[in-house]
Image 1 (cartoon, rainbow, N blue to C red):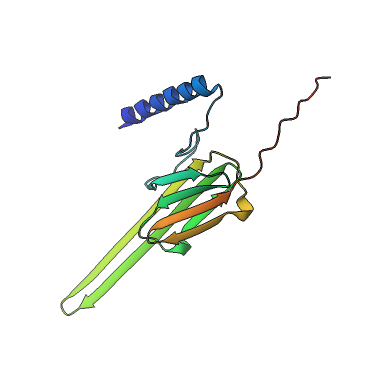
Image 2: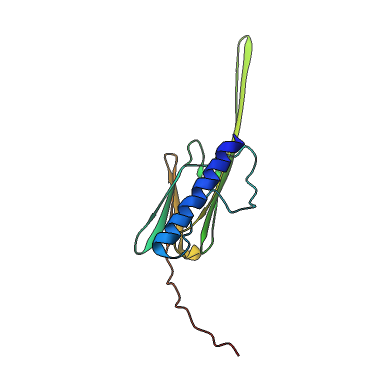
Length: 150
């Protein structure tokens, strides 16, 4: 299994070099499971996430079935989206002659580097039918100011 992740890492590096050759600058990955050195919670599932970008906003849509709204935690910075969730469910039925008890728990975790800077304060999230949607308005990209070396 580790060899597959090594192959994937090499493929990602190759794609980044290709983008840099075509566009002349390094490209930030559109989807990323995290930054180098990041520790992902053991056993956490990574939800499938689609990221789309319009002129006004960045929209992330994540598949996270089986959760309640209150189970989901979202952190947005100007360049990253972090989604996590933890759920625990216990079901117990007692009938004549037997006791049925089932426990389930699970967690999700995903960190995504966003393709454009966004405004965390005006971002909005909604969750319906197992789909989380996070809408993040873009911020104005500030122009570079040349500095004179003294």
